[in-house]
Image: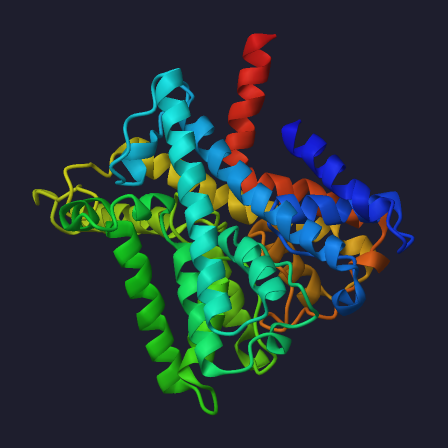
Length: 397
């Protein structure tokens, strides 16, 4: 309900603007902004009114903050066995009291605001225009895909700016609580194994692809890979479409669990892979004592963690299948339909990274736009959260 009301409010400036945008298109832009998906009905951002460009970026900044709050509130639910500090390894208190929730939400807001200012300063310091730096800082920290112009290459014109963007993308992938512990070596080592795994994975993948590829700079490749992991999908023009399927698969991985990234998330893949190897080892050596600890902590990779990660994994691909079928009436070719479904479920904007930059959302039929809106929301709050909300609704009635 809150998402719907917020999206409706955000869509009003589009509807009442001078661009003659229909109500459904305005609503589509509003939902795309607040869910951090980044699909747009505007064909030429360059000629948009600057206030509308700021509004688009602000909608994603608000959406990013909203979904971090939502994440905390959903994990604070007593019926939700998957507690925040059980899965994130962050040194935050167990969420069990109203005052405790308020304190954590305040911390998240201050961290989110601080990181936004940090990214703005970083981009502006690399001689990116202040207007562009402001818009990019809001969309990067929220991992949205709205740009203040048609293409990132019109903003990023040198290596210094590219490196600044890479740092900003790294920040947006990581655990939002990392900033609290940034100057505490013991807590960084103890509580952020997930972030270390994420950084290690990104670097290793980048090095392997760079070694196998030709005529691509390492910074450009790293920028593209980070754009996939943080699910923003934004990229510069000089991108090889030969890697579109590879890039698309990376959007499914996602970033840190306590971040605005979408996808399945790197922690859940770790939980599933560890559980799979443990079961395989049991079959080969039944009497072997298997270490069930998550990373090097005292937290256990128990049945509940594995079950929920598996449910999210399965529901993720079921959602892709259902949305692909629902988009068939638009008569897009199968490849574009499947790619669009994956990008929707991972809340990632369409770009030439994935070979679907030319899809015109304005020309989609109304049923397809409504389907995309529904799955943008479901993808952002995750299907398992939808089940929980439905369960709570019926239990109250």
